[in-house]
Image 1 (tube, rainbow, N blue to C red):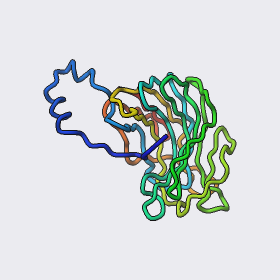
Image 2 (cartoon, helix red, strand yellow):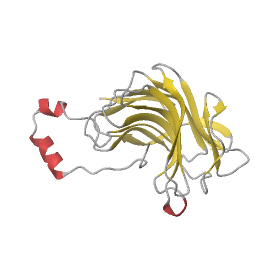
Image 3 (spheres, helix red, strand yellow):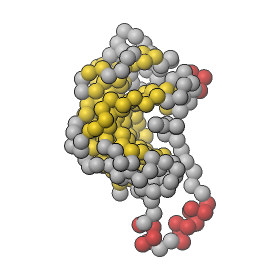
Image 4 (cartoon, rainbow, N blue to C red):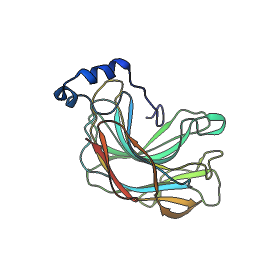
Length: 229
């Protein structure tokens, strides 16, 4: 599902010039986000051994091409041993013509990302309590949790114990076709595990991810809404 994790994309000189020349009416019709991946969310200010949240799709996502998602997770591109990609995330995803579905994704040890579907249909307004958490007595081993139940086998992520600043974000990928994928997700009850196995503490926001055309509305450290416009 994710060829890259939090990939930065440049803006071409031609695109900048066009936007400067375009009248306000034309600018309003430009696709939201940037080519490729766009994000709207936060990274935790503190390292942790896991992250949890209650996710809700406030409306049916509208996906022209690619996908949209709302997830919590740890790791990233180049964050594994010897600069390898290493991440684990769980959340909601939707594709063109599909309902929201629960999934998790993992990559480690140089392997390609592995996408695992948990529930093929999640209705708008339905609450999903999700988490990734390092196992208490097994450093560097993690599990994925949904609604209080483990939904994955133990996952080995070498060198990961206490290394990552957890992330909570909405995401869209345009599938290589410029357009605007629309979503509205609420992240609630956000918390970070301060030790293996749990001991949940407040999610303190640090870096914000916010690409053009999307917005993040915050009510407290423990909640925010990510949506279009």
